[in-house]
Amino acid sequence: MSSILKNKWFKFSIALIICLLMIIWIGNYWLILGLPILFDVYISKKVHWAFWKKRGVKKQSATVEWVDAIIFAVVAATIIRMFFIEAYTIPTSSMEKSLLVGDYLFVSKVAYGPKIPNTPLSFPFAHHTMPLTKSTKSYLEWIQWPYKRLAGISEVKRNDVVVFNFPAGDTIIVGRENPDYYTNLRGIGDQFMSDDMKKGRTLQSEKKYIDMARKYLAQNTEIATRPVDKQENYIKRCVGLPGDTLLCIDGELHVNGKPQDKIEDMQYNYVVRTNGTPINPRKLEELNIAKADIDHRGSDYNLPLSLSKVEELKKLSNVVSIIRRNSTQGISEDVFPFSDHYTWNRDNFGPLVIPKKGQTVSLNLETLPLYERAINAYEGNDLKVQDSTIYINGKIATEFTFKMDYYWMMGDNRHMSADSRYWGYVPEDHIVGKASFIWLSLDKDKTAFSKIRWNRVFKWIH
Image 1 (cartoon, rainbow, N blue to C red):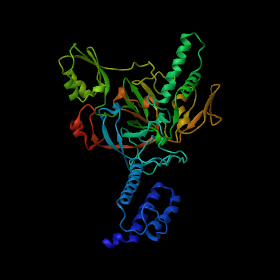
Image 2: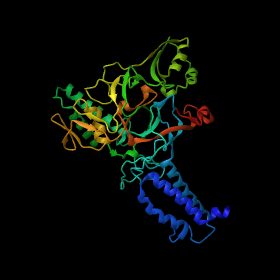
Image 3: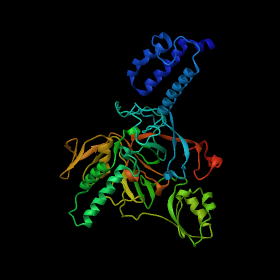
Image 4: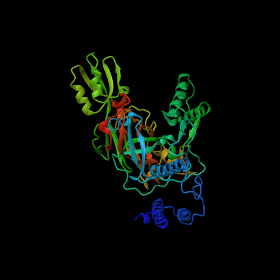
């Protein structure tokens, strides 16, 4: 048996089968042209591929063996990370309490099918920035591949916890990535308009103020762009699938006319008022409320709470009232689609239909804000509006047919989540994978071994 395992033809056959299966999965049959290299590595051995080793020497030095092991580990880990599974850390509280800050989890690439990298020339294990640097790119854009997703074992389902590339992260302000570039544009544009109003100047169009803001940022900050696969990774729950109709009333989301499926531990912000005495800090710790999330002013506490935690706090003798915060219906906030035609806010928006591949929508000045970024940025069209007429790729357009599916993502911590309400749809080419299970969880408010949340280690994500 051992002689068979050591046989060069047996090793070649196994490697050949694996390579052929990978080529079929990837769907790029030009890769077959690389099989002669595989034959030479195992059989003919005309080329010295392992150049770091001395040819013909059976016993290599310890240094060479270490180099050999490191190269193998890097190649193997890169393939696993690219096609199968990748590690991810929860950095913010947007998914609390379903996922906690400090959770370390694995993201399945095969769940929805791994994406072929848009920028294949990149430093191993670095996402978009070189280690120990703040702005040095970890990738080269000499080669740019179009979007292609390999076959997966399933499709994105409603209420899946999904990791995806941040849709508004294609353009960034270096060193000031939060809030995102487009939020900064709108904010600075509003400031310019407010200044004109205060000084009695003639008001300009919204587009004019955005152009002024874009010029201001270009002159005063460093602006950079990123390809899709190098945009920041975000994690949210998919609450809207392609073709779904969403309507949110006073924070309660309805999907296709029905209330959203119950999500355990979903949170909103509440004002907890006491009789003037403070809430015992140990009680807040027992409820897993992070210190960073406790906003205490006088007798009022502003806390993110699930319904079960609301009931627990109601039992305290010094708690007078608990009222959920809610944005008033009809009062506009800076939420998608960022248009005066829609008086939407974080708790009240819609009805909104999520674009679907092959779906055709009517375009006019009122509906355009709903689809403008999808048409322009995500599907790569040249969209312009001149004299109240919409042009796509130089032609008058009254309708548009989508080439991709889109999704609506929201955090379970509804009042502390930057999600689709603030940047719109997530295109299918931005989907990275499905959050599968937590392999480690660390509480930043604790020390030493008490930092480990043992009850969350190796926990599946739902």
